[in-house]
Length: 221
Ligand code: 3PG
Image 1 (spheres, helix red, strand yellow):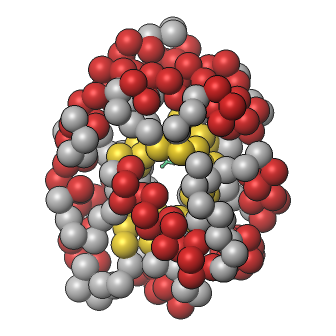
Image 2 (spheres, rainbow, N blue to C red):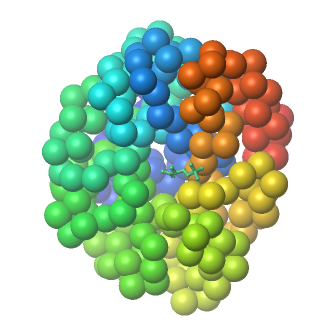
């Protein structure tokens, strides 16, 4: 269980601590609460104890509730938070953290107001500076693979030194370690270890194996 915060700067400390501890953040999309629990167990077994459930399916919030009840020890956040109403939905199910795929002004303001540990996304230096100006100290860099990949992460270190990054989008087993070696990277996000095809076919064995490899390259295996 994550510590709840009552002020925004403290919630950013918590977001940074959560992402740094995770190192690899599985982005999970499920079609039922039962699937969510099974995936969370497989990830945990593979050494990945922090999970982002993407709010991309009708089952996502039920899955978060079920995981919190049935898989103790797992840190569960909501991803694909797109509008302020998503923050409220996520709060009601007791999420540990929030991640967005992009950050409108309204969403940024609502995240600050919520004091839930948040990692809002940016895709450009200007967007990173806007988030920094609002007091965010960690941002998801999305979709990093299409934006310039590792080179973009390296080039941001000079001009945007005080923003920690959580690159996501198009990262895989082959390049995750290179991202994690960058000093401005807190963690990498990705769905490579929780392929929707594996979930649909009940291949939790493959999720466990891929999670073990991901956990090892994150320094946890
Ligand atoms: C995300 O929201 O971060 C992405 O969906 C994860 O990207 P990937 O599916 O390309 O790994």
